[in-house]
Length: 378
Image 1 (cartoon, one colour):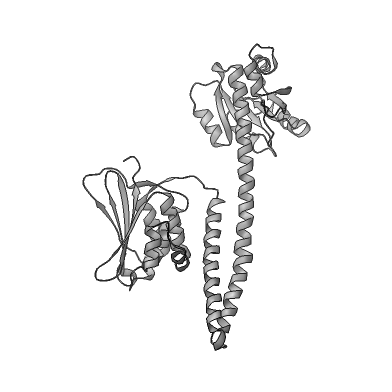
Image 2: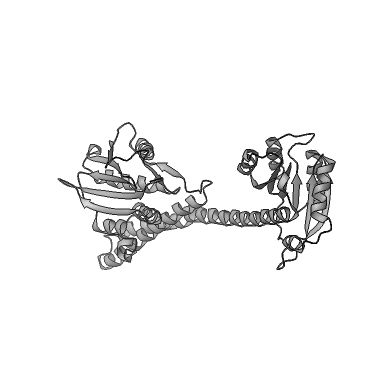
């Protein structure tokens, strides 16, 4: 079997961009090596494969050690690598190849009918995998081309992520620091010059709004640049228990599970990496408005199609501006200005997930915030 790899981004040759590609084959079986060479550079009447990729050069070596030398000396654009070599066997070949500096991206080409080996290789950085016995010239060319295209996209995403990370550093270290200075100096001026009191108040109000927006942007950017960017499934009760434990310490806020009707299975929802932060911000807000921490409760209810969580408190009610922002993503500028960064983040996340959010009065005082999610596998 073989492993297909491409080094740092190279433009893929198509009818639009005629950039030739240099191929390195690492294979210790002479028959397999000859087959790949014929597929890549042998004469054919199939013009379609040639338009998919223009092979400029083909080089062959028979060990992982020699492959490393070829990468350093010739910098091939794409590599075909057999997994079972004299100096490396199986999935360890993928891992060792992936540790080489400036290594190409790769696609497993396996002789085994089961796809487990290919899946393992993808999990370790492979672009794709192919089944050796069904290999054709057109399939090989198409796979190489798509591997290069995916690698180009990944390189662009990595560069964008790096830029966002730098932006986040500037937001947290520089802009937030300057805003804190403005707010601090404004606080010192309050009450000292009565004639300018109104102007100072406006400066402070604008400063706090800007700081809230900066905090929100920084937190969102941090989430984007986090290694975990997938949209995972969450078991809601377990997620809430983790949040409560970290937020509440030794004191336990009760979490009650209510089943409406006769649903079966777990209270599982699809979220985003920011979901935990959004729920944590709602819980913090609820606790802050409670008379005591014992006056806060969380209820999870599920039906066949939905999972809902309700945060309730006895104490102060949720402000009208916060209620409007949570329930209506198209809130006015005034409501956005009045809302804290936590409520803004929660509103954004729940809106993206398609949640239905409602806010009601609690008895004898306080509020109930209900967030309803679509249930996974309902």
